[in-house]
Length: 429
Ligand code: GDP
Ligand code: IMO
Ligand code: MG
Image (cartoon, rainbow, N blue to C red; front, side, top):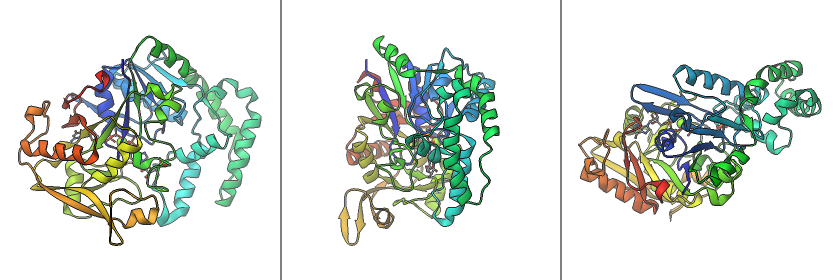
């Protein structure tokens, strides 16, 4: 039976959480494979709204939920999120939730460094979520991270802590900051260790067993392809690979396991934080998209920048991530616009381009070429079947799939779980 890998195909916040929650009831396990609590996913089920950052979105349906080794894990954020969701009636225990024991930890010193760097960068700041994501990934590849499995061996952790503190103290001194309080750090780790360890295990082994039993695995990506550290709008990116290929390395299963790649695509474009955004609208239309789409960040509450759909970017994301089909979300936000625009190419120094260049300054200078389509007066909000969609909205969807060279598998028409149109079942592909 096919597995499904869900990734964001724009700059994040495409509605991945809603789609993963909807698909989770058809899956036997949901695995987060990169990122950390920089993610913010809003799930709406009836009258209840769930906000998740670190936990896989499958947890709400009670599906076996796994945090893979590719994630950077803040133990205190984990505990707070589990407590918040438990208070909302979600069951989370070692039976239905596991954490890879080789996950690197996000520590308070990572958050400190994230904040110090952003403050020092002034206007050149990345606009990070301030969660310590970048510094934690740096320590992982720098081979000085403290990992989940280390929490079971705190008495022999001194050499690792010393190495980590020596590195951070040099950086902190450069910012005029006090050294790390080593004893406090150890005391904090000692206190949180049993909580994290109750969920810790070699998840690759658990996944191997799940796979052998023929179960369906849903891999849940965070952020989006345009925030990928290699393929995104570097340096205005996050510090992990967000493309579908990471599902394998970030969970401990091979690339043949990732199955149907479902790219989540918003019917227009948003971005939070700094960096190039060719179709950004700093006008009334942009404001209208933001208001109608409630475009405020789940994690930081920041206002998201808004603009028209950029088919060039999404076509590129789909190619880079091997997207099999897309879920087109927030179509309802375009209801009532007299006309809608789609970016079909760029102009740069008098030349026409059909792709987004790699160089940051060129990315900032490209000018979008638009195609304008008639909008639709009718509402698509809450539509659950293709037949419920106005003809003009169908034309828009068809034009999108033509331009991005990738078929539509799902359409989402409201935040509510069930307001979803299934065109092609990714698990049956
Ligand atoms: P994620 O990070 O990709 O999971 O997306 P977020 O949850 O950060 O942002 C998407 C927002 O849009 C959330 O508030 C969702 O509840 C909401 N949403 C998801 N799908 C739809 C949709 O089809 N229509 C509307 N109006 N809102 C949606
Ligand atoms: P979800 O999973 C949107 C952005 C930040 C910033 C850049 C780097 O909800 O789609 P970081 O804290 O990761 O070092 O910040 O990446 N960013 C996101 N933008 N959605 C997200 O996650 C994001 N996670 C990080 O705003 O521009
Ligand atoms: Mg989000």
